[in-house]
Image (cartoon, rainbow, N blue to C red; front, side, top):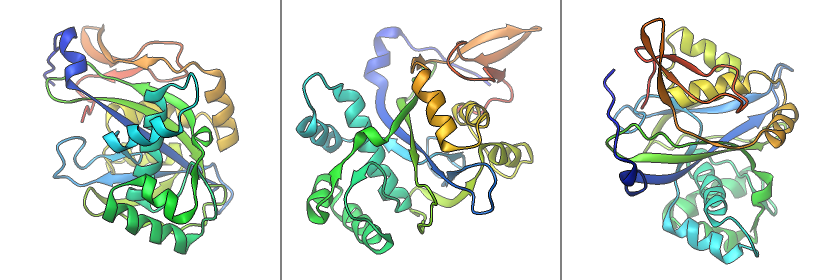
Length: 264
């Protein structure tokens, strides 16, 4: 697979801030916690046909809303990403995370329709008497690859818990074609069997998540593991190029042969 480095001064110019939510629910049959996975439409430029976690880019309206609720000393970039994670989750899946207020399946469905129509999370919050609870999203990782010639996504990953998860989900057909619940190990098994395609960051994050069986275990791990920016790099192993990430960031698997790596 051919790769192209871009000059350091162009990283920021090509960077698009983004947010991803790893949404947990308890397995109805008592197995390891399940995670919501989304299969993207094959026509999309980035990660077309790949199975990923819900998420998307941080919009200007997300930053505006973050600025309105930010307290003294707040990290506005992180807060805007949390707002985007809440918005994208509702838009893509119909699930409500990171919100304080009355929510049930019918309300969530109405709120989703309103959000898709208006494109403004702030208006939805006002209409339903909700307030943002960004602290309910647990910082997990930040990936910022810098070996691309096109747009670079600086993506912050957050954990969210639905508990029993007894909430309907409905695919957003504009970007996605299928959604399903699976344990992290189950999703890796599906990829190994060729039933789904996962890109390099998704694979390594699933390997990390598969170390734990409950949301509580995963959250405890995340809270004691520093979130350092991950920029994959090339390394030679037995004469072959591997795509790698740094050590000591909580990942049990740090890379794979470049010829096998799916990079989006």
